[in-house]
Amino acid sequence: MRHGCAEPGERFPDWERDFARSAPLELEIGPGRGGFALEHAARHPEIDLVAIEARRSDCELIRARAARRGLRNLAVIQGDARLLVPRFFPAGSLSAVHLHFPDPWWKTRHHKRRVIDVELAALLRRILKKGGQIEFRTDVAAYAREAERTWLEAGFEKLPDVPPEVLSTRERRYAGKGQPVFRARFENPIPGGDVRPVEITGRTGREWRDVRRK
Image 1 (cartoon, rainbow, N blue to C red):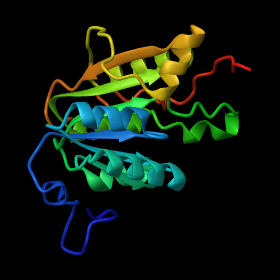
Image 2 (tube, rainbow, N blue to C red; image 1 turned 60 degrees about the vertical axis):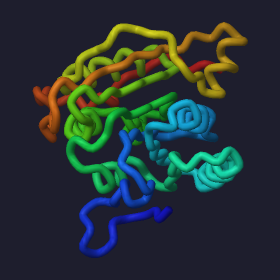
Image 3 (spheres, one colour; image 1 turned 120 degrees about the vertical axis):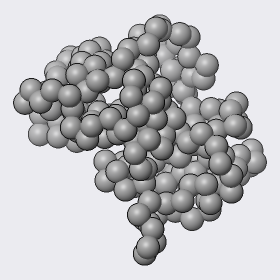
Image 4 (cartoon, rainbow, N blue to C red; image 1 turned 180 degrees about the vertical axis):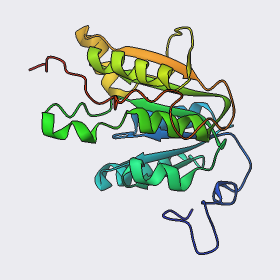
């Protein structure tokens, strides 16, 4: 399977060609060491999953594990999701997006690196199909509150809570310690949502603060 930017003459990668079939396409941003991505792809052979991870070593680890398990429906790409997502997925092409435990970037000067903001929410409105879902998880209460506000202001609709089918490695560890995890799902009510949020308020969605655990 080829990875990287679109070739000359191609606006976006041809995922049906790369996966050698037509199937619902899902995205995970920041899979870490791949605990969720590997299990989700294994449980759902009917979908194709693209995972974008910044760390090269984690990408190589996930690819090796996927190869050992014979998972042909998982593609792992190394890079910055904020740059790659708008170049990889045309409007209405994704069935689901998974965002699990994004880095809180605690220092004030690093807040601009927080991945969930109004720009990402607007982008996901555009590239998710009608009925396409965002599945979000975090262990930071303020991040959960601010992200929910960001999704809702962009026009997503919150779905009822349901128990997660697959826990990430971090969630299994947290369960043993009794540490809370905040989970929520949101649905895109219309296909090809606007590129900008429904209402521009001046907030970025990255301003939140919380107490950092030791």
